[in-house]
Length: 279
Image 1 (cartoon, one colour):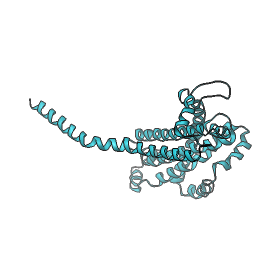
Image 2: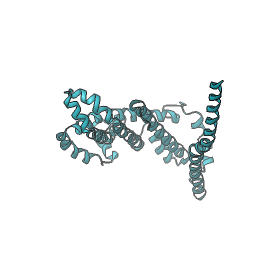
Image 3: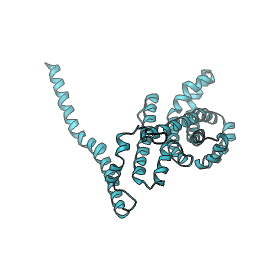
Image 4: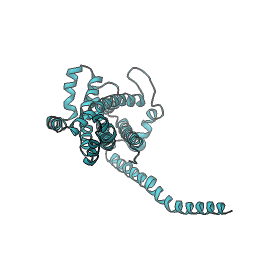
């Protein structure tokens, strides 16, 4: 009988808490983001009314893009593909370049963070190459590879290196000296110090760099595909603009933004699983 009373009391308390929390959750998670989106749509509609000769309204854009939305993976010829295929082509280039960059950047960041000599030797190069525009690398990559696809991957690779290198080096150099002193007293081998102390302590910094690098890679691919052509969401934007089809450009902008959000969310979830911390 006492157990039933306790369970009833817990249930009543839980309902009371949920009644207080629920309105705040609905407001913060649903209503406020919805208000932001509605504000953008209203602003778009107002601008479209003053630029009706070229700019479609949100409703007109929705109607014009129904075929892309309802059939994202259609194939009607060699160059006539649904927006889903174009997005996958861009994602493939981004992920290849990003993963290659991570494979190079994380070890280099560890080297810089653990060695003052390496930092003095490599830091000037990083500071020189980091601010170089991604598009400045495109002619060099085209000269090396003579093909659009590997050139785009190379540009993504070279521009996604720097945030991961810098954040990894910062994480390694920020490890508490007390931990390293204890490891030295215990005569822990260097590789064990790296795997048991430095690596776990540096993971939040590494993932921060990876998230920034992935965001940069996704930005870069759109600009690179505009110039190199071929199959991809960036070339789709340029091709539709050349046809003065702004309805499809707006659809591409939405797809690019949502995809970037999902990529960052995915890396954040991986970080949460690896580090066992909420991000």
